[in-house]
Structures are given as C-alpha cells and as structure tokens.
Image (tube, rainbow, N blue to C red; front, side, top):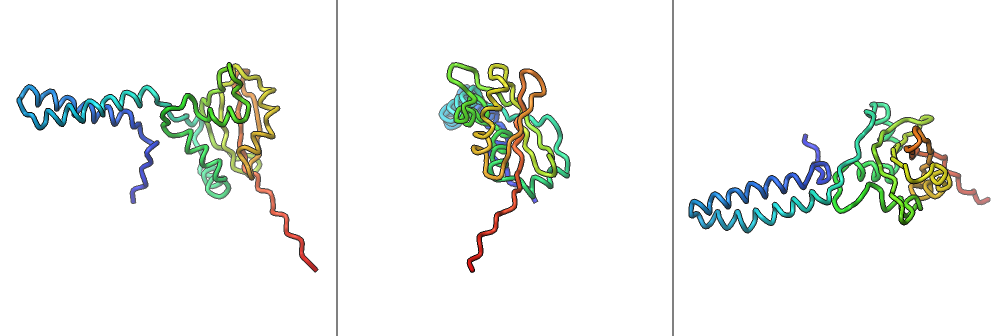
Length: 196
C-alpha cells in the first residue's frame, strides 16, 4: 500500500523547472519545425511554468536535517506521547517551505527571541530523543547573535507557546548553539471533586 505523498516532501521548484524546461524546449523545436500547435503549448505554458519554478527556487527554504537517526524506541514513544504541536513543528521544519526566511521565524518573533535589528536564530537541525521516559523533539539552533541567557529568560513563555503538555529544556552544546528540547509532559489529570 502506497503512503500519501505530501506536497512539502518533494522539491516543487525543481519539478516546475523540469516541466517548464521541457515544455519550453518543445516549443522552440516546434517553432523551427513549423508546428504551430506545439509551438503555442511550449511558449504559452512552458515559459510561465519555467518562470514560476525559478521564482519558487529563489524563495525556497530547504527542510531542516535530522542530525541523528531516530531509534525504533523513540518512534514508538512519538506515536504514543507526541502532542499535536510537537508533530506539527516536526512536520513543518522537515519539509520544503516557500516565502519564509527561516524555519520557525514567526514563532521566534512571538517568543521575543528575534529582536528587531538582530539576526534571527537559525534552525540548523533536529533530532528526536527519549528524556526520562518521555518523547522529546530537540530543535538545534545556531544562535550566535542571541545570548543563552535570553533563551533561559524566555523558557516559561516557550513552554506556554508550545504547550499544553510540553516542557522545555535548554542546553548549550557550543558557544553559538542552543538546543531546545520540547519534552512531552504526561502529568496525571486531577480528578474532579466529588459532590457529597
């Protein structure tokens, strides 16, 4: 059984460039062979599709790479515990995006992690892990212009932004890198008071 192909999983700009290029070449060949039907198809469809592919290519943001393979145990944890927000973030950053400058740039602005006039921290990769028996999505940022202390100050805001049922852990593997772990927080539900 074939899985569903998602639009963001393949490079749309390359597809448009290939189709537009083929149609344009067919148009030129047909022009020199006096085949007006193919000539029209090639020029009227090929050139706009080719230009559309070039425009998408210029505005393309490639998927963030996985920096570590995800183990079967972590995949099982993801299936059992991942929140809709964790899944959405993972899916968004691992697909081609068009018209965005950086992955999660809007989220970082809302969190106050992209001050005006400064360069936004850039998502350089991600990996999935198990932390204390819980699923964790770890986002790896190049953060050379934003100090680690600013990330720490925004920790509560990060948790409320990516929550509910998510806690954030921050680490600094190198001076210019910040890892943000979004960890599933499986807190037991508080039972409702029983009326006597």
